Image 1 (cartoon, rainbow, N blue to C red):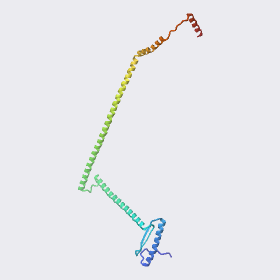
Image 2 (image 1 turned 135 degrees about the vertical axis):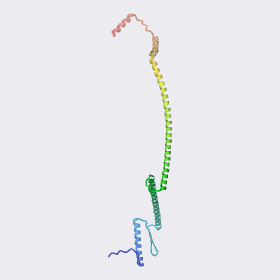
Image 3 (image 1 turned 180 degrees about the vertical axis):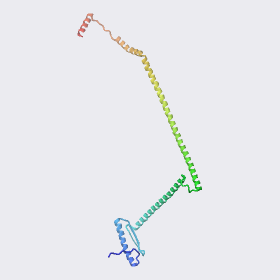
Image 4 (image 1 turned 90 degrees about the vertical axis):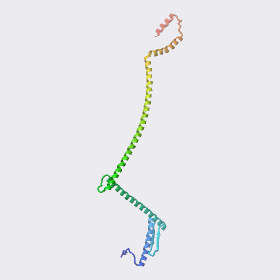
Length: 240
């Protein structure tokens, strides 16, 4: 027969309870040691008997295990506190958003049937104040835009004046160039209208050295008799 299932409840017999405690304690310590060795786990086990006697086991040291436990518990509590604070803040923001949505619907003229005189008066005052703020903001925006436009206009005016100065300078340069070109055209036209003077002057300059050259050359002297000259001419004709 197999072992029967033991009911998990307090053993009334003191002797049986003590025997069961010793057996189960030794088995628990054995399993704890095996778990720490096999899985490289940091384990601390503390057992107090019914008489107050202490039994403990620690894979490293009980002090380090307890410090690790308190630190982990503190971190966990901080995380829980942080999570709860975030949850409370999210809930507050949700309520605030719901309130703003409700106020917006009322300002838009919706869901006004359940409001009294005082609430309607308060809503009217809010609308007047909002309209005043909108007008003030609109006027301020328009003034800012007008100021920016004036600044841009002044900058454009300065640029326009600079462009006009450059254009005037270009016109002056063009006028000077036109004067120079007209003077050259006049010189060319004068040269074309009096070509004989220029040619005569040119021939005079050329003729003077030719005359000087002719005067400087010696005159040939012919001492041969006429008969010899005739014979020489006849012989030249025969050769040709």
